[in-house]
Length: 261
Image (cartoon, rainbow, N blue to C red):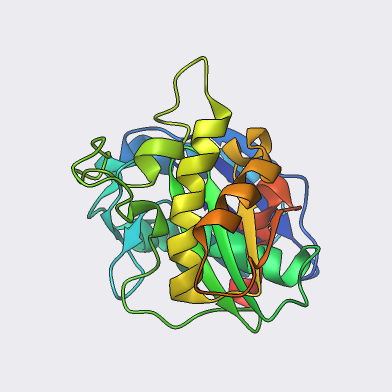
C-alpha cells in the first residue's frame, strides 16, 4: 500500500493506493500553520486511512520551493513556518518507510498528464490557481527537467504592482489567486490578468495544451481568457488549446502515485 500526501497552503489531502493505479477517496484536513502541528495532524490522520495495512512508500507534494535534494522547503509564501524544517526526514522517521517529495502543483500536473482527460498530449503547461498560483511544464507525461522548479505564478505582470506574499511586486499570483481576491470579484479583470501570465508562459514553454487547475479556476470565464489571449498572442499563428483540468482535488495525489512508479 502506498501513502499519498498533498500538502497545500490551505488543506492537506491524504489517500492510499493498493494497486499503484487507483487511489482511495481522499481525506482532507486543514493545513496547520505550524510545522510541528502539521506533522501531528498527518501522524494522527494516516491510521484512519490505512487501518492495519502495511505501507510500502510515501509520495508527497508540498506547496513551495524545495531544496535540490527535495527534502525540505526553502521558500514557501503560504507555509512560512514550514521553511527549513526536516519534512522528508520527519515523515520517513514517523512511518518507517521511504518518501519521495516534490512541489504540490508539479505533482498536480503530473497527475493530470498521466490520469486525466488529456493524458495523450505531448507538452502540457499546467497552471493551478488556488490559494496561490503554481505551474509545471510536462513533457511526454513527465515533469520537465529543471534547476529550481517552476514558478509561473511569480512572473511579473505589473511592474512595481501589488505586493506578493513572497515579497516581490506585481506578480501574477497577486492578481489572480484566492489569497488576494476580494468580494465582489471582477472575474473579467481576473481573466485579463491571467491571460497576461498565460501569454508569457506560452511563449516561453510552447505547449500543445494549457491546462488550468485549482479551486479559483472553477469560477474563471474560459471564454474571456481565450479572447484576451487571442489578442495578446501575436507571435504564434494560433492560441494553443486551453481547458480546465478534470481531476479536481485528486490530481496531486495521483501525481504523487506516479512519482512512486
